[in-house]
Length: 284
Image: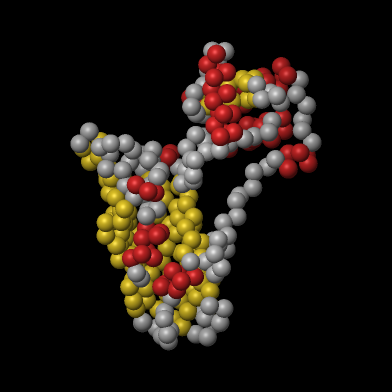
């Protein structure tokens, strides 16, 4: 929601409130904790009983005891001037005092560290987005870990010499390719399947200190846009490069981006072509 990046809104939220982002969708994770489900149900129930505005996606302000103080529907909250006025009114009516700077710092969200879960693993950050009319769907983020055994398929076995080329096994490539669908109502990677793929690695240069490998990929992924009858197919060509430290036996950088990519899904039996962009980068 663009209003949450507005300077006035950010100032009001950080000075007078404790911000909490709560998603009803368990994106790529397991079942929601029972306590979280109950808290959400309590807010929904109280909002409905008191005839307050809002819905499944809305701004809800709670009292310290957990009861609902106020709510604002998404249509209104998406406009910065509306959300700022809503918050300013709560500050004025409640005679709220600014929070202490240390309290603000303590509640500031921090990016989660995406470190390898296994010894020697390589974590890759996969990003996809629409270009054009659906650009407002935003940028999707996924993190995929290749085990030490898996990422070794990306670097030359034996002697590394310029021009040496090989095909990366499908089981390794597919682990990343499965996430090459754009932001959509259906975000479940379990519904993705790789229909076609090729990932070619070629040594560009080699020395005792660094081996650089060029990557070239073609992939077709099946992923439904939403519910029944919205079958979609993503087709892309990508190029990239990775750097490998032979002394440390570690990939020091990985970057891949789409040269061209499209996603065509179905609506009422009619194809809906979309242009998308894909990028993959290693996590430091």
